Amino acid sequence: MRTKSLMFAQMPRVMLPFILALAAVTFYRGHHVPGGGFIGGLVGALAFILVALGQGAEVARRVMRVEPITLLWIGVGIALCALLMGFVGGSGGFEGLWLDEFKVPLIGKVHLGTPMLFDLGVFLTVMGFATKVGFGLQEDNL
Image (cartoon, rainbow, N blue to C red):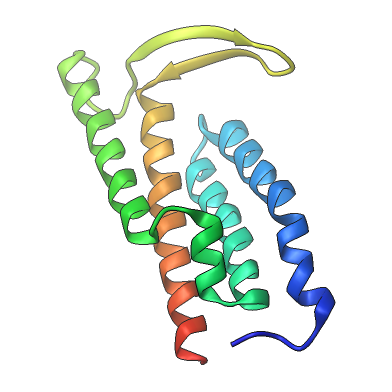
């Protein structure tokens, strides 16, 4: 179902990069505190759900390029791998095993470790689930 408002149909496509950048910033800023991956995933899903509301779920699926259910399972896999890496590394699971630290221009030092990988898994899982539900509601015309 397409909307009759031209502005509502085109604005989500224009705003998509900005909303996805906001999701990435939310994920990065919050990956050391509870909720960073979860809130970032919700913001990322919002970008594609807005495209689905404005132009239809099929257009949003093409823009997303990955099926939401695939994204969900990739996220679950990454989260489980992060947990297993923590156990194998001797840190006891979620407490964290630091893999590497590097400097990124405009951001500064980035610590890549199991907490960030786990949060990435949560981010992808939430984004996959929320877009799957959002696209399903759009397709059912509720």
